[in-house]
Image 1 (tube, rainbow, N blue to C red):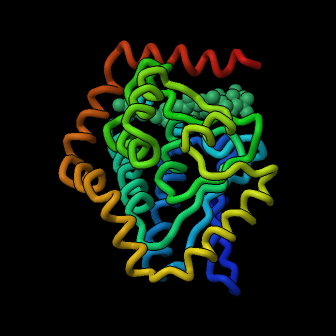
Image 2 (cartoon, rainbow, N blue to C red):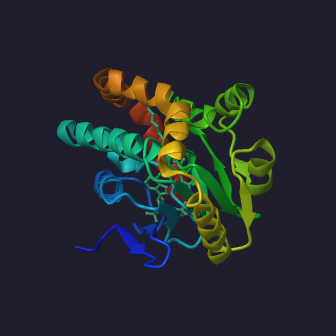
Length: 258
Ligand code: CO8
C-alpha cells in the first residue's frame, strides 16, 4: 500500500514537511484524511518544532473533499469520512506546534480549509486559485470552514467570499490577506516557510501556543460541542436527492472539461 502522506524531518531545524501525495489532485478521501490525522497526532506527541504542509502534485495543492465520498455514499463510510475530516481539522487548527501551508497549486474548498487551518500561508503565483467556493456548487461551507476563514480575513471579506463562492488568484488572495506571501515555485515556498518557522523558534513555545489557541478557541469549542449535530447535518444533507443530482452533474462537468 502506497502512503498518501510523506513526512520528512529536517534533523537540523526539527521542522517536518508533510506532503500530500494522493495524485492527481489530493482530493480528500477517507484514507488521506486518516493519514493526515495520524500524522498530526504524531507531530503533537513529539512536540514538533513546526510543520510545512504541501503537495506532491505539480499544479494542485488539494482539490478539496473527494466528491466520490459524497456521491451515492455508503452509510458507514460517509460517517467515517466526515468524522475523519472533523478530526483532521481539530488537530490541525488546534495544533500546539506552528504550521505553514506551502500552497503549490490550486486550493479550492477543502483544500482552502487545510491552508486556512495553518498559521501562515505562502502560495505559488501567479496562476493558481484559492477559496471556499462551495456556494458555486450549490452547497454551503459548514460553520467551522467559515470560522477558519474568519480567523484569517475580516468578517466582511469572509461574508463576501462565501456568498459569491469566490476563488482568489494568488495576487487577489495576498491583497485581501487570505495568504501571507507569494512564492515563485514550490522550492521558494518551502524555503519561505522554513524561514517563518525558524523565526518562530525564537519565541516562547508556551506563549505562542496560548496566543494561537485563544484566537482559535471559540471555533474549536463550537465543533467539539456540536460534533454529532454537524455529522448528522452533513449526512442528511448529502443524502438529499437534489444534492446527489448536483454532485452527479458536477462530476460530469469535471470529466467533460477534457
Ligand atoms: N473529488 C473527486 N475527484 C476530483 C476532484 C474532487 N474534488 N477534483 C478533481 N477530481 C478528478 C477529476 O474528475 C479528474 O478525474 P478523471 O481524470 O477521472 O477525469 C481528475 O481528478 C483530475 O482533475 P482535473 O482534470 O480537473 O485536473 P486539473 O488539474 O485540470 O484541475 C482542479 C484541478 C482545479 C483542482 C479541478 O479538478 C477542480 O476544480 N476540482 C474540483 C474542486 C472542487 O470544487 N472541490 C470541491 C469539493 S467540496 C469540498 O471540498 C467542501 C464541501 C463541504 C460540504 C459541505 C456540505 C454540508
